[in-house]
Length: 329
Image (cartoon, rainbow, N blue to C red):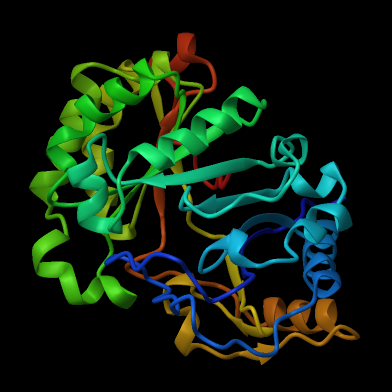
């Protein structure tokens, strides 16, 4: 039986957020905004079940702010753990979480966004203090939820990466997912102030190699865009010696499903793209037809194309090869 094709899916449950982060590629609407035509819980669960059954699907299910959707707990009731394990959810840590922690622990990842280990760094990007976010994380971890800290690297925090990771590891965190600031959506207005150049990312890699955090973590991922591939490959051998492996993320198809059922391809262009509309009676045939003609094939300057991650087997990390075609989460 042929292997299922890898498909990255971004499913947006609501376009509203209680924060106004300056790097929001989605450019989420404020709390008071009026929103019509939300996909129902049943329709969203149909998307998840159908794509998981048909493809090797990995879901980022998000907002806006995910937990501002008042009926969102129903999505967890509609999906068994066999489906939840393909889902990553990201929250800002200051919205009320109304889902059973036992169900959150079934997810592939439960991510909480932070921008640094100080109030100044957190406030600079997100306009909030760090303490309430950490309280949310601590409470969830005591309830058995394996929280991943999701960090955007930018010009004001990149030189603190090692210090930041040491601080969070000291607080009991062991799961980290790092991304580079992208000049997309709202973030395009602040690119001159926050976007990184190659020398800054080189500094980040030196920090990771200087005192490896791989052995101190359960999950560590640094995901970067296509233009960073040459830099990562130049560091490959040194990274492997420190317990990391380099993963090729190219070649996977991409699908976005907006809160109102509008279909697209690129998560960085979600509010401007429309390649179709969710129709319950024909959703899977519609997706397969687009897949067959390459309409979901995707590469752009913002989407992740290469990843540095903690090696699954640290003892063999130094001999690990570049993992071609591996889109594992």
